[in-house]
Length: 281
Picture 1 (tube, rainbow, N blue to C red):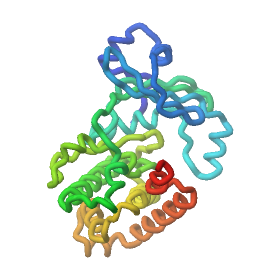
Picture 2: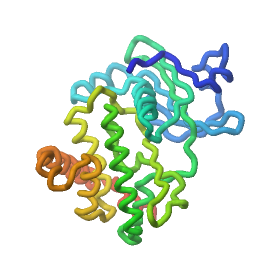
Picture 3: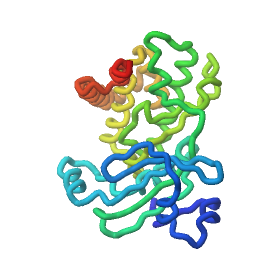
Picture 4: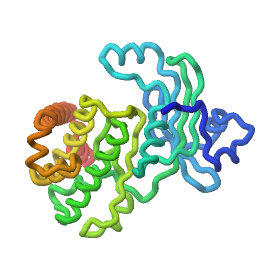
């Protein structure tokens, strides 16, 4: 999927007609959300409507070389997120709705870019929603519905050739959690934080392991049973449990190892959700 140097949705094309989009995004009044290295995220409003923007500044050759040396694909600009969000929307997944995008500069180390997306309101991360589950178990039907929905989202995302690279339940937003019925009806999950996502014709096995391992690790502390995990796998692979265990045992073992490694590292660094919750209290 080729990336245009500039994309403006009709409403932004009208609003910024004849103007430099980079100057316009730099001029808006912002509410900072996050700033790391050469990337910042902020919220802003235009005509009373909320949007989020990510602005990337050139990462520099040192960062590029560091990523290459450890076998990682460096994130040079907002193109990854633009491509992934566009692709996921095309296959019918709820995700970031791109309002504007721009990239400029041939030098990969000094490239500037931005991505503007519509604000997604009335949501909570699936991580925050499930954090109380060990002490306040959900209705079984609700849990089953959420597991099935996550499996459907993961299957559709990977089927579209997109691997997330940060596929944790904190990057799934549950829409209108207060309207979720005990039977788990009306489950809507948005896939967000796609800035490291990759898009190919088919997701390689290595990246399936990383995505599924990350997802698995992020659910370790919410009291999911073996039956819950098998329900997810059966739905994701569209196979009966016995058949999926026979056909995908090697893959599942790799996912288990990946998840266990991630969990041990997060526990050592005191960044598990339950650990952070205790620190706040």
